[in-house]
Amino acid sequence: MVTIAAIIYEPGNSIKNKTGSWRTFRPILDNEKCVKCENCYIFCPEGAIQEDENGNFKIDYDYCKGCLICMNECPVNAITKVREEK
Amino acid sequence: MCEVKVITGTSAAAEAAKLADVDVIAAYPITPQTTCVEKLAEFVANGELDAEYIKVESEHSAMSACIGAAATGARTFTATASQGLALMHEMLFIASGMRLPIVMMVANRALSAPINIWNDHQDSISERDSGWIQIYVEDNQETLDSIIQAYKIAENEDVLLPVMVCLDGFILTHTVEPVTIPKAERVREFLGVYEPKHAYLDPDRPVTQGPVGVPDCYMETRKQVEEAMERAKKVIKEVNEEFAERFKRKYGNGLVEAYNLDKADTVLVAMGSVCGTIKYVIDELKKEGKEVGLLRIRTYRPFPKEDVRELLKDAENIAVLDKNISFGFNKGALGIEMASILKNKKVCNYIVGLGGRDIKIDDIKTIINHVEKAEDDTTLWIGLKE
Ligand code: SF4
Ligand code: SF4
View (spheres, chains in turn brown, yellow):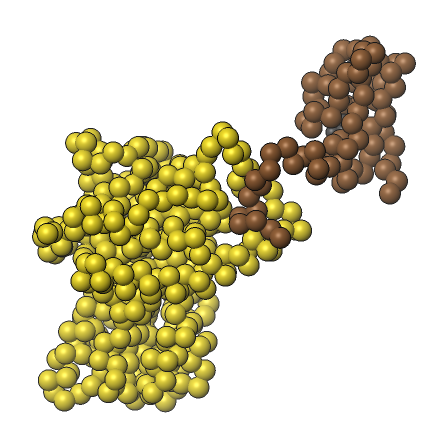
């Protein structure tokens, strides 16, 4: 059932609602080439890129929408794209 | 008990907002609405009304501010006219889609070009499909009473829709009439405290209002607005009854007002202040032994289809007066709607009073003579120059 005016009463619903389903291209981050400049982390509009405990950058595909801004901003071409397969 | 003041329509609207004890007023002045928000500024400045008065840079912002305020659960008021209402267009849909019970006074005025500050209904009629309840009043007393009623209608949990109370620019906004002002406590009793269950700002109960409505849920929200409009018909009638009990003033059944309909084969259908002139003509004709009726549409949205069908079932000649025109169809909005619900009847449409052109007693008589002789449904522009 849709609530009145589609108001969302539960906080944190984005944990349930994954937004990574509409991606056409999937960015692939190569940690071998990465120089840890953090550009992709800063520019990703979805906050889908995080640094893990080993200091490597990782893309969370549950929320990455495939805009490829990260690929565009990476100074060393450590991010490439592949077509998303359903 | 109460006080009688001789005031303009805009002052009556401001008095009503004060009596409703609104929390937030957002205002941008536009003729002929200006004197309403000026009066409210005075009330707030004098400490007569404890409300947040937000001065904004346009009507688009005025409605935006009202939406923001109403989304926190505040009782909100604004007023506009003509181009200002048109500038609000985008925000009007957001207010109704978010189900915010905002009340707005609309001083009906023609739309440009050519620039015209005088009265017709083109401005609010153009917002017909915005999901706002629309009430068209006949005089200044009804302006005050309808704004008070509007809060009770809008805030009803079966409704939760914004309401515009439309009064004719200059004809009512700038004309003084005696208006009975009820006591504030009695209005407070009538309205009660607004405790929103759906739209509020509370850090302990976080909500997301106005989210993305993907194709998966958007259509359902539109259906909800339509269903709320349907339920509003009953609520408007009940509020009108309850208001009559408490304040001894009544406006038909809330949706429509019938005047001398019983014996009349010829019926005029109209909205707003012109109904006063029509009633005068009806009384004059009655003295000559001729029975003509008036069906005043008070609530244009939701449209009182059932009442109209019932009340006009015996009418033979139906003349619909419109102070607006749907270009390319050569009928006014009311004319189109009446024709669509009265399929086997003769419904003629008369375009009157655009841009403040006077609607004279003789014009009403011309309409009556025309509709009685008309063979089929026609549209006639009244008072045009050769
Ligand atoms: S493609 Fe866009 S959304 Fe996905 S990680 Fe890169 S910047 Fe973020
Ligand atoms: S932009 Fe490229 S180099 Fe910089 S952190 Fe991201 S992947 Fe590594």
